[in-house]
Image 1 (spheres, helix red, strand yellow):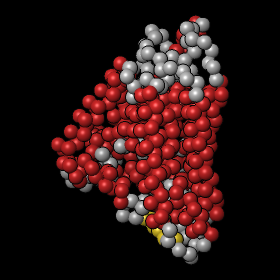
Image 2 (tube, helix red, strand yellow; image 1 turned 90 degrees about the horizontal axis):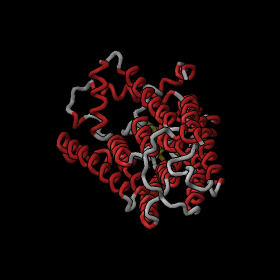
Image 3 (cartoon, rainbow, N blue to C red; image 1 turned 180 degrees about the horizontal axis):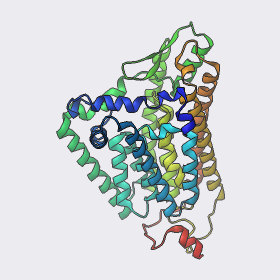
Image 4 (spheres, rainbow, N blue to C red; image 1 turned 90 degrees about the vertical axis):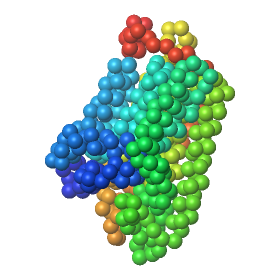
Length: 407
């Protein structure tokens, strides 16, 4: 991690943190700061700036993200998710120092803890999803596969709603309606980011013919975007795919409702499918988005709550666990390709002429993203076909690894 961080190409990594710092130094009211993000992000960054000052803001930011990273690993380990914890630790150097230099670690850890606490602590699970949605709006969709008529699901939904409404009201009172919805309006106005899956073909055509109809420039949205003939069509496709991704989330909610709830593993897999659909469909894609996928994915590598206890028969479909490990391995490969692309070979993407190695990495990473999403779908279908009923909420007195050791 340090070896990568000190490379000249890694200057890109701290760019966003310096951008955050410039905003909190501006002296503007909270309602005018970082309009592309929900207002709780501004409060978090200003609190960090107040405690660390200008000189230590960057290391304080990275240390905070590292501590959140460690928090998730320790929580998994103590709960008996030993394989998941070790896989998460391995993932960090695969994706690289960007994990500690973007606040996407916050919603990722919230989603990881929500997946961990789905059965044992349903109210805490709902709170985590709401906190994740307060930082990045998309996690709100992850509550949908958790809907059912169980008392635990109702507690989860109430905790999610109360926390989310409280944060939304606080944001509304502090910044007004326009500031509350500014992240949505900002996102809708953005163009086709160079790393997005839907930009793969335009970027490849740009590589084949640098003097052709495409160009790569920094847009007013502080991101490198591809411009040229046909880009508007890809943006329209993104809009359609995003609508389908939301419809998919709603469909999974209906499946959960009809089955009176999904079991723990199927629920986490459903959330992974939703995250993958959003990443593939989005017209924007940044390297740190893959940590969103990784945190819940770590939870499916071990036995989960309500599965293979002493009262239950052996797991009826070992292929589900196999598919879960395939998802994990593909995510590791996707993370590794992402780090090779950004920051190590990013200059070849935004420069002219585009670099061959950078273009190959971009195409390969985006293909792996689609493949990983497809395997998540396969794993979910395999899990749903088992017809395993949702288990009632329970809170064993000892961690799962201790229970398994006693057996």
